[in-house]
Image (cartoon, rainbow, N blue to C red; front, side, top):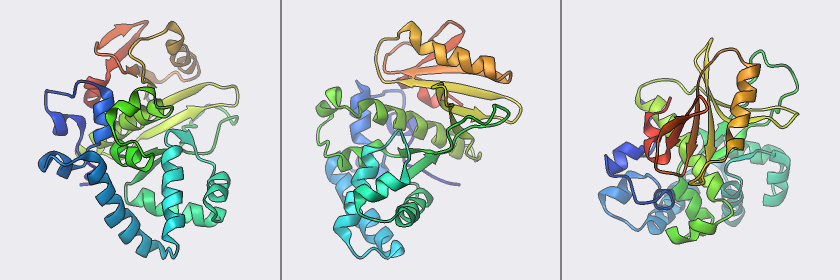
Length: 262
């Protein structure tokens, strides 16, 4: 079994926190809940002991400050398309070094590289993966977010919320002993679907919005992708509101119910 940090249900049971900001800030590492640790301190311990000490030895990193800059730059790119050249330049390392460091972070389940979905949908598709931190608490620490209240107006709140949803989908698969089947879709014309779950002949598509209210425009990409792919069996829109319901043929899912997806 591949065990990631706690899922939403494992961490909170039937009593989720009062707001998504709280869970994004706290993250899901078990000791935070078992020992009731301060999330910022716990993430600091995790980064300094495992990520910076153990992984640094595996990677043979000589300049700790440079590796820390790299980690923080990765956190600032969570939920975004990965550009290894730009990331390496900003961190002061080569393209190949950035690729190597990221491969170890992915193998250690610190980050997730979400690959593009391309089956039978033409050639004008984005080929770069999207980068996600698998624990939002660690990402918040690396972004110097030290209180949940800072998330309310933080420019990366939406990206962190998206990271939380992607992580929950992956946990649900792994906790069932199933393989990773998560992708995203983006073409050269601007159509993007945040997550495509591949079930072979059929897929499920999922859009993610951190806001508590929904606009009619949020459903347009789901309709457009369904026109391209005849095998869409279910469409979801996960948002920061409290009510799970159906709208325009889409299952609208509250952040509190993300554990029931996939």
